Every structure is written in structure tokens, then in C-alpha cells.
Length: 337
Image 1 (cartoon, one colour):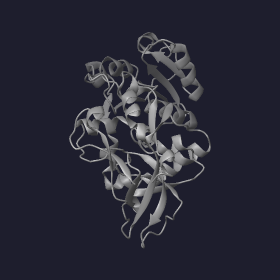
Image 2 (tube, one colour):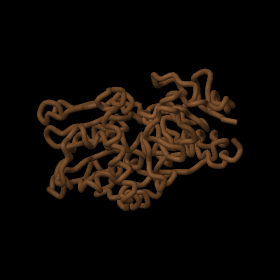
Image 3 (tube, one colour):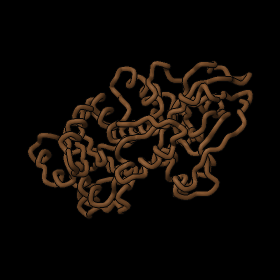
Image 4 (cartoon, helix red, strand yellow):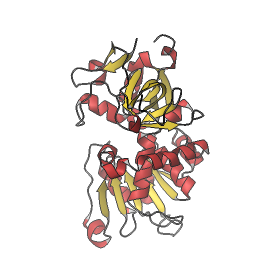
């Protein structure tokens, strides 16, 4: 029987989420019925359950991949057996969903589960930030903090594919050299700790051009540090605030360097009709990168759907939001539903 993870009241996910059976949905004439294969656990999903995000749903889940098992009479471009991802918030932490055809994007069956289940949120977010704020070229440099986050490793790979250099900042930790080696294997030009980035002279010596674009998911002193290295008229885009500290700009940054501060929220961007219309083109480019092995899923772990609390527990643990991404795996349920 179809099963979903749901909540009646907002609160801490481990306290308020539970499993519930529901009737098999029937697609409307313009809809497809999708059996989920896998669904990612993202920070936005956690925030929605906690009531920190202005979206009310009974079942969380922003992204995932599934298989079409039934189509309505007016569906033209999807057929039974197609692999698809939702391009709207669909509540993917459930075994079956129905969505209008226009809200689903077909992906090649050759795309592996980890890439397919994480194709929508982080890749589209990073693609958009890298493309829309600055016209980046091969001589340009991008600097980012939280470089080992799911978004960070996507940005590294995209910049590598496009010939753009990256300076990547991470928190110091045990086995920091292993982390640096991993990020460089993805294409990072430089990797520094928060302390090292304050002391580096790679920009003063001309080894690298000062970054024209900074990506900030931390805030506080970390954001200030990467802002300090931006070129004149550089842009700092903030898409998160894991430190819970404000982004503060100096007079020098604003008056003498004309640094521009921008914020980015994928849901807000997606809600604009002209942006939503761009999604198929963006996703086609991202799919091509995956097929060409230029883009891989971030470090991840597949967790059986019924063991969802394990995925939540690990995501909520210290470091979980910027460590391994957890993906709910529905495949063991397919024979039981």
C-alpha cells in the first residue's frame, strides 16, 4: 500500500514525522502517476518540517526521481516506464505522487540513482548562481565558503567543466589534507581553511585574478573574509547562513570597491514564470554534464525509506548539513506495494 512520511504539526523532525499509508492516487487527465525510486533529504525539507520555511505541506521532500507507472488521457510527452524528476515541490518522501506533465522532467534511464535523486535542487541552484549574477569567462575566479557542502562540490565541478578557476574555503578539521585532496580531485583550483584564506597572497602576487563572484552559505566572519578578496565591482551572493551570523560589509567594500551584495533563494526564483520556463534548458545542460561524467553526486549515503529516521538523525547531527547527503531509497519497497 502507498506509504508516506508526514507530519501534522511543525517541530523537530525526529519528533513529529511518522509513516502513514494512503490510497493509491489516480492521475487526472493531464497528470502522470509516479512511483518514487529515491528522494533526497535536503536542509530545506528539514526547515519546512521545523516551521522555519514559509511552505505548508503534509509530506516533505523537494526532490527525487521516480518511474511513471500510469498516465492520464491527455498526457502527450510521457509514457509508462519513463524516469522523471519533479520540478516543483512535490512531497517526494512518499512512495507515489501524481503531478501534471508540465511539472515533471524526463531523464535518461542511464542516470544512476544518486545523481537522479539529487539533480534538481543543488545543481540548478549552483548553475543559476554561476550564470545569472556575473558573466563568467575562462580568466575569471570564483571564491566560495562551505566548499565541501553538497552545493559546494557541485560548484567546483561546474566551474571545472566551464574552465573557471575556484578558490574554496572550508572549516579546519581532522584529516583536512584528505578533504583538500578530495575537493581538488573534483577540480578545485585552491582549497584553504578559514584561517589560511585570511593569509594567502595568491591574489597579491597575481597568481590568480581576484574573484569576480563569491558564493556564501555561511555568513558572519566567513562571508567577510571572502568578500575581502573580491575584485572591484565583484558580487557576493548569499544563499545560506549556517553560522546564523549576519553578512556584514565594510565601507571599503561598498564605497571604494563597489561590491554588490545579492541574495538567492531557489524557491523564490522558481516561482517566477519566466524563470520556471528556463528549467528544461538548464536541466538538459545538467543532464549532459552527468552523462559526460563532468558532474557527480555529492558524497552521499542511500538509506532504506522505512529507516528514514536514520537519514534524519545523520542530517541533523553536527556537521550533517555540510557533510554527506542522505537519500531515501524506495527500491526495496517496490515488491511490497
